[in-house]
Length: 219
Image (tube, rainbow, N blue to C red):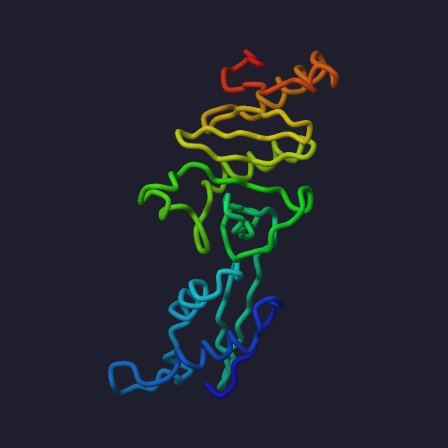
């Protein structure tokens, strides 16, 4: 392999990826065969290591380009939301709920914001909180929750212990949900609730609890 080229990407500097590939191809395999031999390049290994090394990358394909080159084809993750901790540390989430790089703190409304309150700050559980290189929720649950929250003005999502979710509205009250809730039904119930409880009444509202099927409890 005499040349390594990159297709796609942008946020991850091309020279960092090509340098990583060059390093991985150094030396010999089985103490005899040069790893740079185009016929012996382990493309699967390169792809796996580069995905781990560069969390910004959503997909990667290493292609042999005979007689002596490799093409690295990458697609980067899109910034869909942010995950923030109480102390102000934030990171970007992609469309699947994968935490892929640290971010600055944004003013409300720039990105949909998640707050993770599932782990105690005084026990070892806190160290298990999802962060770079991990998913904040199963992908299907994350997508459904994001879709629900984007129908609520000024929403912020709070993840709580026991599978409970809170969606804090721009009006200052909270929608209570849980991981076992049918979100399509909850959205339909929310529309009915919003029609029946007007803006003036909602000014003093603390929460609307949509965790119990067709029943809505509010305070």
